[in-house]
Length: 111
Image 1 (cartoon, rainbow, N blue to C red):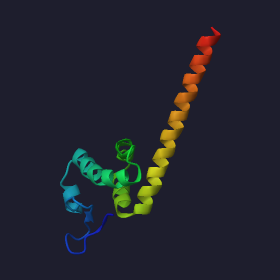
Image 2 (image 1 turned 90 degrees about the vertical axis):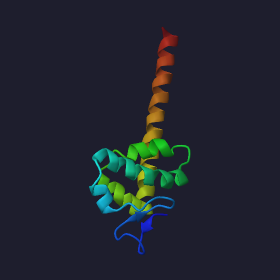
Image 3 (image 1 turned 90 degrees about the horizontal axis):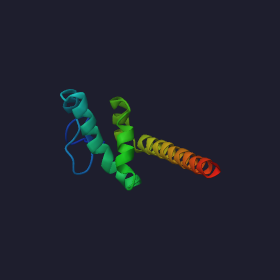
Image 4 (image 1 turned 60 degrees about the horizontal axis):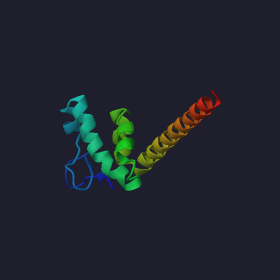
């Protein structure tokens, strides 16, 4: 679980097995590098919740503003809520695709 690192860098976010993510490290990175750094820390946390969809959900969440991503790293509840939201979007998308496929099959059978 991510936590503030009282013995290490102040205001850093620590994920087991990773270097602490500090505000200075983010500030010195390009926008693309920032997303990479955040994604590398989000992925293992999401993978614990949704192993099969972790890559897809991480990619979806990386579309969100970095400030909110940092909040999700600090708050497991916030991350869990966003993961559940992403799953609902994926399920709705799958249902829509399934409906469209059934409509296409019905239309071609009626022709």
